Length: 368
Ligand code: AOF
Ligand code: ZN
Image (tube, rainbow, N blue to C red; front, side, top):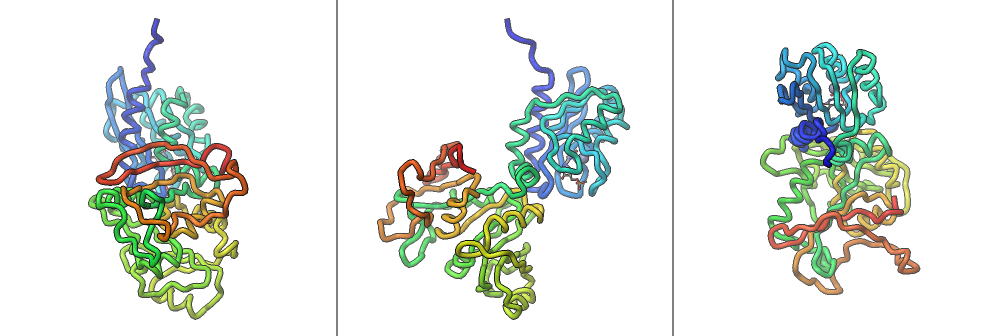
């Protein structure tokens, strides 16, 4: 005999679908959706669209109007209990007379962290948590990472040939992958809070590292790791729109002033091996409310991030071509002493994008 179907499953799936509409826009807030159900029928829907705007619950309550009384609200994240940029959603749900609340994931924000659920329960509202929790977290890897680990979710993008090369020996790399792969990468940039690169890449390629995809209204912060402040104030990455942050370990006031007058914010961090301390840089970016950090860098910085176990996800676009052994490698890494010590990954997804292949990989268990 089949178990009775879970009545919260379908509205929660719908709430998750709505939440995903905020993929490019809610930053630094999470992507959240809400569906209000009464007698098995959806009477209101909402999602968080933009930071500073109404939360998902408020939008759904407005749509439901008087039908919210006694209804169930399915929300992908615990309703907030704090006065942030907007008043607490828990209070709005209570005031609207909601009878029952079903929540996918608890809000890891220390200003909420269970107190939203507690406030609802104290008002006599039946509260259920759990359905859709994995999907709600998957939709917000950076928001959870920032609050739970104190660092952004780091996505390292690489574009290589079949033999794992990223450029000719002289640095020429435009283009290894095709237009479809590059457009796909634009969409990954659009969901990030910041795009990180190293100054060597800026000096060599003069990339813009901005988002130029239709429908993207927000420019992620562009971050350059530049231990000795070599960045030129006229490099393309500095040009508007969007903001630029340089993380350095240099105290050179003159160079700092030159960058500042070009609108670049410069912050000093401790030095690590071969440059700015990477863990400190990630901590700082989490403090700046960066959820997802999209990295497009050369072999040295990519290798250092991999070697330090700071990469959460690797997006590898592989072009069906060979560049030969003289071409540039994908990551500069210390050679493992034994095969057991090599960096291993699990393949999460393979997909053909135009003429190229896209692999999404995660570090194998036991790392990070
Ligand atoms: C909810 N529903 O739709 C969202 C929530 O500054 P504020 O007022 O926008 O609050 C931001 C915080 O609220 C954010 O860090 C997270 O903890 C929570 N987000 N909560 O009840 C929503 N987006
Ligand atoms: Zn809220």
